[in-house]
Image (tube, rainbow, N blue to C red; front, side, top):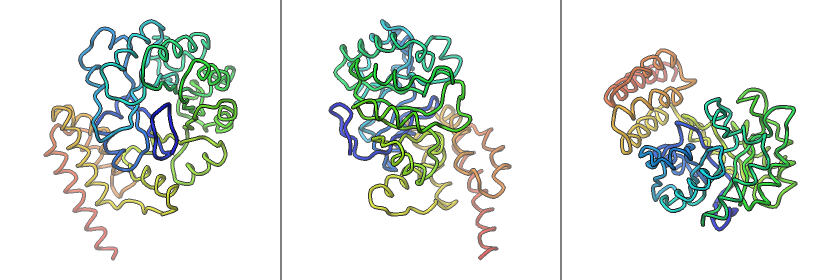
Length: 330
């Protein structure tokens, strides 16, 4: 257990914020699999300031997913503070996180995300302004730097701590690396050594062994798992249980993967119209069957679904196919 401000996090396994992914339905699944903390997908400061209804909806938190952090992005001090105050007053989240790590061009054009790493003074102003105007703990998520000529995560972390942030998450890649190459855990260890606030390490955690190695090598307070949990929430449970009890959770069967995929779709339909939920499942469903026999053919079918019935039919037929293979090999 560790604390972010006054918020107790019961275990050191954190689900990374991912745009278009970590909505309420996904977060509830990850919480069910045992994550200590989950993050929302990032929300725009300008959209909140303009009162955009869809963005305001993204601030909703289900009682079953606490503790949860709402992640905010933007590039101007005034609008970031205003938006953070809105979140503080209108969301029942536990933590407000500032995105200073997103590498995509759309966000960079707004002088936001990882572009802020080029402006340490502005980072200090944003964090200080938000901390002074909200009641919830404020955290920051950064990368190791903007590019290899600007590896400044330690300096940024020290400024963020000085500005009053309660924790910092560090992805061990630069913006220019995007999600390619190898994450530099050394820079994460340097950040941990430089500040007193909790540090969450992110990058290249794809297994229980990876999580254990990061904790041992960097001394971070928690590990953040991102893309490796897509279609594989069992990874969260495996890491949590291994760290807690030493118990080894087996890999899921194809039956469990298919059942969880359908459960995911149902959770999405609780918060979205069926067509919207199924559009999202076009992305999620292929992750659940990744690596299974003849999954490429099925992925093509899944990319066209419009209804839950279609999803259920495709997966039922695929399960029969896998049952047949399984029975043949017994």
